[in-house]
Length: 252
Image (cartoon, rainbow, N blue to C red; front, side, top):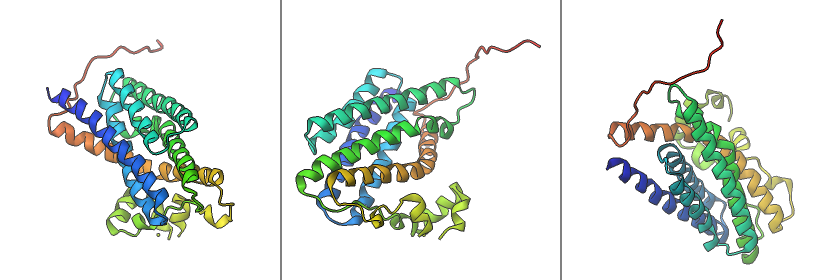
């Protein structure tokens, strides 16, 4: 019973988070203020956490498939466009690839090591998110007549004392860099390159920015997913058991 509750809770929460993620992109498009991109960053961090937990804990492929399809296609509410739907299909394939990579690594491990397992599917996952975010930005922004290159102020996160300490534990090398060098490392300053403010260029800029930011945040998020997984085991919602395995070895 606890497993069923967890399974359907993750399914429901993933869809809720997905909806608010696409809503936050829409808000960022319609509210001309660079700081509004802080909220989408939080929502997409939650998107990654909940979908990663689903990929790890839910074995039913039908439920995972439904979660991926519905979660991505909720973006059509804000950018109802056929070409955007085609981009969503590509992103869907990438998320399925991420899911398969994670499940394959889970099946190969003798001992659970979730950060390593999640890193196996990280690239495809971040590519999928970057595609959908930039596609929605392009099609919705084009309709809204948006003329501003999107920017992310990483300082909103990096200036926080607790966030700094956590980041330094994850990556000690960051202590050698100042709240500007880190900003450039996390989010390259494409805006300063005086790119033409046309929707297709801005969509490409956003795609590259999301990939840069996603690659950085994923280093932290894999540990947060592991922490939530650990809490679920403590609560008895998830059980870990040891089973005998057969291995092929070369005789000496």
